[in-house]
Amino acid sequence: MSEPMEDQLSRIKEEIADSFDEELEMQMEEDRLDELVAEGMSGPADPTIDRKLYFRELFRLQHELVRLQDWVQYKKLKVVILFEGRDSAGKGGAIKRVTQRLNPRVARVVALPAPTERERNQWYFQRYVSHLPTAGEMVMFDRSWYNRAGVERVMGFATSEQVEEFFRDTPEFERMLVRSGIILLKYWFSITDEEQEFRFKMRIHDPLKQWKLSPMDLQSRVHWEDYTRAKEDMLQRTHIPEAPWWVVQAVDKKKARLNMIAHLLAQVPYESVPKESIELPARVRHEDYARHPVPAELYVPEIY
Image (cartoon, rainbow, N blue to C red; front, top):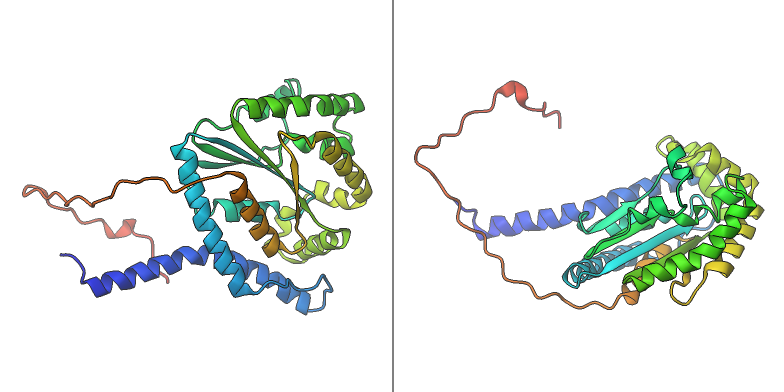
């Protein structure tokens, strides 16, 4: 027996509110860090953007991302988005907000671990090529082949000859991707020395965030200036007309997310996709079917 219309509307509102709760929960997690600051740790100034404005704009932009996703599928486009930046620059948070409402079969995130021995002896770009999109896909790289221009260069995991080879090959590699029909977008999330120090200290003092701090992250503080020089060289030598770099001011995380998503939407012209109306088919019932009770011991205890 179907529910009365009033009850259905009430449940629809609850479902919509529940879909927003995921973002609110993530925001509450960040608010916990603000409480730690209030307990005595000094840090950067509070973000200036109003919270209601932030959520209103985020949900609006995420709606547009769904439209973009539909267009990518409809037109069989291939989109690659690189997220680069220093440790704790906010890449992961931005990726979460981009993918939050999207279909994971269309919008994939690639975050590769350190290369294996086999991968170290392959063509450098080989392990990234296998993750490139097919028609109708968007792929987001949480760090990418630019590892060689950053951490591998600074920490001595790549020789100077390998780094030079990377800078010779990368513009040609990316031109090949673009010629093949891939839309390639490269974002660098920029934060200050003081902001990175603050975020690292927050992770040290927050037990739910400590897993994010690796020995390599801590070494990035020691090598701040080396990373700066490497970044400047990378931007200068791989900023090409076919695949330019876009720098996101990321000291204010909320503004950075909104600005990055708005910019992304502007880079890929899209339209509404024509869709057929959907009708829910009637549930088929069979006289000879009787539902069997589920044994009580199979249920998860309802402690809440």
